Image (cartoon, rainbow, N blue to C red; front, side):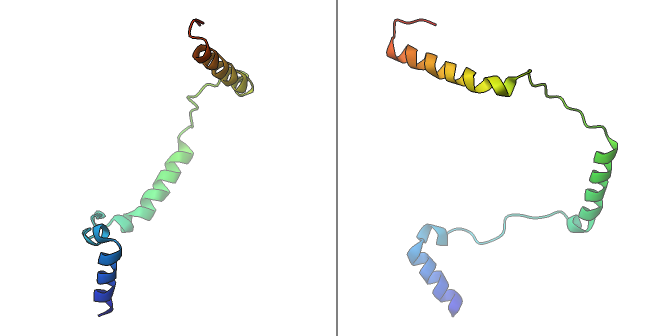
Length: 88
């Protein structure tokens, strides 16, 4: 009885939500949770063995110069909006 009252209340408060299928659309493969701990341990072991490569290069003083570069671009953009004859 409580379930019917809750359903009626839901239909009154949020009719579109009440129409949503209540079945769980997600599934996990057979044995997923049985194999998960071993897979996590293997992944950690591999990450400790394989070398970590840093493929990102940051120019010298990049972060120190960034605010000034951004402010310059904003200023130039404002100039170009105020004076249409000004060319960059």
